[in-house]
Image 1 (cartoon, rainbow, N blue to C red):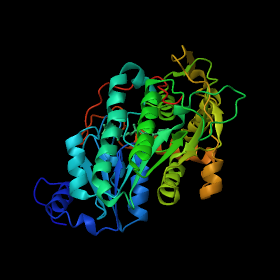
Image 2: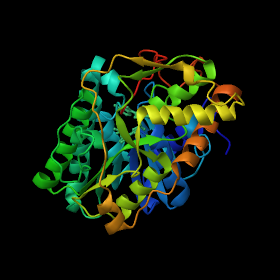
Image 3: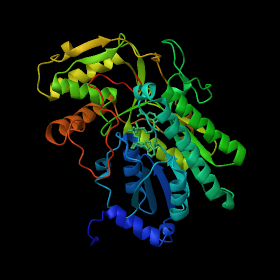
Image 4: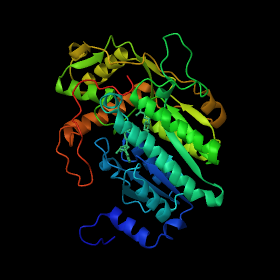
Length: 389
Ligand SMILES: NC(=O)c1ccc[n+]([C@@H]2O[C@H](COP(=O)([O-])OP(=O)(O)OC[C@H]3O[C@@H](n4cnc5c(N)ncnc54)[C@H](O)[C@@H]3O)[C@@H](O)[C@H]2O)c1
């Protein structure tokens, strides 16, 4: 396509669609996916753009420090993909997007997602995660109510952290477990879920919610546990572990999460909540040992070479001991299963980070050259800044 000077393909497509918004309406579905330049969102966008060429996928992302438009380089020119840089908490901008592109559905992932950041800056989490969700709900309600909400879906992507914390011997969280968030992050996600359900009960907005456990895989911003540990092993830096490293998390490969979102979006029942998890619980310290074993092997270092980097540090305030999810509803009702074996998923992930870190642009230290990307508010620390751990 011959583009006007100084114009990206996406700007060109956005202008074209804006000028003739009926073009957008020719697609069989028009799905607004928020947070698509983040870790999970980029996998969801890629899956939808590649699987459903007849849909228009509109990615709305503010491009915070956690976003990277390069994650979507492989699909950015696809004719059924459109990117709009915008803040989901910006009401007039969201209203404009709804009136121009007439999305029939929303899959909402945009959020501030890092627990440690929520402890230092809870207001930003309330703004993006709560007000952002409420803004989208209100815009969706206003846009869809004239059609009595027929064939519309507002799907909120949430976390297992809203349920609180488990003891070592407790049974896993069910979809019916009462919410008991412990961090500003999980409180903001719980609040968003409550608003989503309130719009279902009060206005009849067709909603779906899923609560997922810890994701791992390529494209995660290197402030979270797994990429931080990999990078620190490469750099021979300390691997600080909160407390005694005994906290337990359930881990799911990010592409398995994206498949579950696809399935729930298309086949899940309106008004329902689905837990998504890997049935794959690991103590942090055991996970770190696995990461050391695989990373040392891939770096051709002697076995156990990086074990001496482990260093135990003072625990995070309010650090939840354990999360675990009962995923039988999703398995039995929709036939979903996690597919990626953990060791294989970890190796794939580590290989991707090593390639990124060693052979291309390091995500963390390279000056940011993308014109669209905003600067980090604060640089991530080298320590194991653990979102869910
Ligand atoms: N990472 C996990 O393990 C996990 C597990 C369960 C649920 N979730 C949920 O999945 C979603 C995505 O998580 P992630 O790990 O990919 O997060 P991420 O931090 O990697 O990406 C978040 C994306 O949202 C965008 N964003 C943030 N605030 C925005 C705003 N106000 N307007 C528009 N865009 C904004 C960012 O620019 C970024 O691209 C979140 O809602 C999170 O709560 C994550």
